[in-house]
Amino acid sequence: MDVAIVGAGLTGLWTAYYLAKADPTLRIVVLEKQIAGFGASGRNGGWCSALFPASTAKLERMHGRPAALAMRRAMIDTVDEVGRVSSAEGIDCDYLRGGTVSFARGSVQRAAAQTEVTDAAAYGVDEIIQTAQGSFDPACARLHPGKLVRGLARVVEGLGVRIAEQTEVLDWQPHRVLTDRGSITADTVVIATEGYGATLPRTHRDVLPLYSLMIATEPLSDAAWREFGIEHGQTFADFRHLLVYGQRTADNRVAFGGRGARYHWGSSIRSSYDRAPDVFEHLRVTLADLFPATRDVAVTHRWGGPLGVPRDWHASVRHDRATGIASAGGYVGDGLSTTNLAGRTLSDLILDRATELTTLPWVGHRSPRWEPEPLRYVGANLGTAAMAAADTEERLTGSPSRIARLMAPLTGH
Image (cartoon, rainbow, N blue to C red):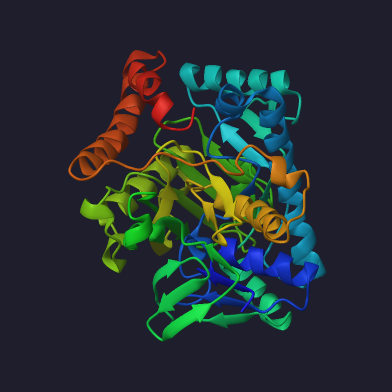
């Protein structure tokens, strides 16, 4: 085998796609414990955005201004690349580039919106503008993640790539992957497990699985959406610290998600964690607070799952030519677009091509490992509680949260 990819989420599938397109003679297998798109790739909020988990300001501090600007431009280009490939390959995933509406609710959030616009102008690489609602960023498309990942899997198989579902990877080493069905030798081994890497001994402390949950409503009328100020193709959020995110789906539902679910001891991942009634209720109440007309609207779907958080909130792409081991991940929920950039970059690295992508600042980056338990458990859950407390602090004081300022270095800012 030329390339063995561990994980049939978007990172693994995009990597397989660009490798197979670049060299159709390559023998590529993608190994997946469940089914393609089982994890965050198929369950996310459908934001194909230019967001990178580490802010542009943080990238500038770490890597310099030219590198930070190059990363931002690459992310903006990636939004369009996902749409281009989806169209070219006939993947019907409801892709529509409508941008993101960010609501500013109260004086503190209005100041945050102004800061976002000012910071964007200072970097001069995007067109974020201030609006009566808050701000608008055109660099985002709405799509259906399940349709994208399953459609991409079909395209990849059509290119001759083998996807081995229901095949659990137990371990790997240079040029070799051990599965519950036997071992595979390959020139290159790509690790694309994202949050599920926490369940494997080799990567247990490389990433923290943080749960994000979602709800979806019954379809709403066009009149209701006009009242909300959200057009087709648009995603939306506000400037609170305990993150929420939503989209207007192709069939006029609200798909709405957010953080708040607790981290589980030992970085454990279980299907029962996907459903936390208190978080679902929090999301329903929060949605009604944003859009009062949804107060009596039926919630028809509830789901969730883990995303991957590196210790420094800095996603990375790596390839060790000596061992043949490559990896990408640490998207902190911004992976719907970033996985595409990872796939293109990994393809160039594996094929030994020096391109603009292989010089981006996330290439070769290595995040610190997470602390052992109980420090990891205490720190992760205190962090979630702190963000909720920061929102409460701002509502009560009308001033920017001191708690949030203290937490900023730990959350990619």
